[in-house]
Length: 328
Ligand SMILES: NC(=O)C1=CN([C@@H]2O[C@H](COP(=O)(O)OP(=O)(O)OC[C@H]3O[C@@H](n4cnc5c(N)ncnc54)[C@H](O)[C@@H]3O)[C@@H](O)[C@H]2O)C=CC1
Ligand SMILES: O=C(O)C(=O)CO
Image (cartoon, rainbow, N blue to C red; front, side, top):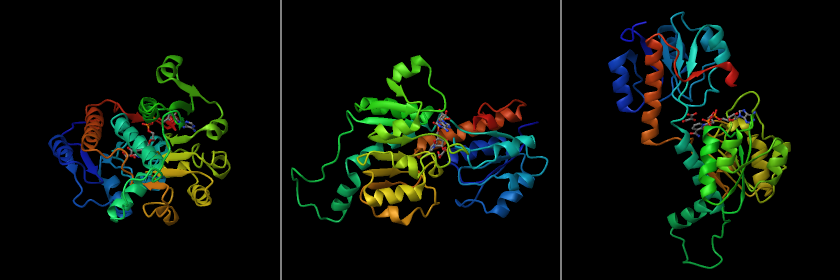
């Protein structure tokens, strides 16, 4: 397939430099407004495109893939997570799927540490007092938080981002623990000085901070359900930058309200962009609008990965970041 003639439809605005390069390489349809496509627009896109470039806000489910024209051959996602794409249905119709892993790792791990500090050092409360002009001056007993150093960090999902979190947290003097689908190789475990827990229940019960870094898949849906959340120590803090669906958000909200855990740092939500209104006004909850990977540099690198995936496909090869259903 000649890359010049490949028809590529992009569902959201991307950094200008990425859009310019896409225009140079392909017959590309870019989005004018920075809003998600409607379902009707997505249907039209899969009926005309050889390659669809969606992102994490698009639902590419079996119903949509079923309406795709026979020309659709690649879904090149702008994003690392691919829980919004029905990869198995795409595969069954001969449509390849690719994503953008790796380039989001360090920025997202930075944000995990920012959320940890935000909650444990009460940054939100301090900020609110300063913004309201209500600061009464330094006091020995004001705004006392907890020290990260010496605390036990449990990482659920020790992949790229989980390991980048471990490296940062170790530099803060935290003790690193993890639960993962597969145990790491001994040399990797040694390098990270990380302790493996086969039992997620046992790890959850012993941690001071729990960072959620696994993908959203059928097997991780509500992995942190009400029963498991109750195992957390009342002094524990939970940080989620993976996907909202991994935590039962209603159960988490109830526990935070009851003071059954100390706090939460959240970048992603189970109940959509409006979030869970009850969470919003809690001083011990730091909420961000899904901005874990949001750096100028990272977004350009994500675009470059998309371009490499599409170009490689156009040149007759499998995209380097091909996603396969077994990865779920
Ligand atoms: N907040 C943000 O802006 C961003 C969020 N993400 C989210 O972070 C997730 C992780 O990204 P990466 O670290 O790059 O993925 P990765 O694939 O490198 O790591 C995920 C790890 O989770 C483990 N895992 C999968 N299922 C599990 C289970 N049932 N129990 C325990 N461990 C399990 C895997 O074995 C793997 O080690 C993405 O899938 C995405 O949802 C990614 C980038 C930015
Ligand atoms: O890449 C992802 O999966 C995100 O959530 C945004 O970078």
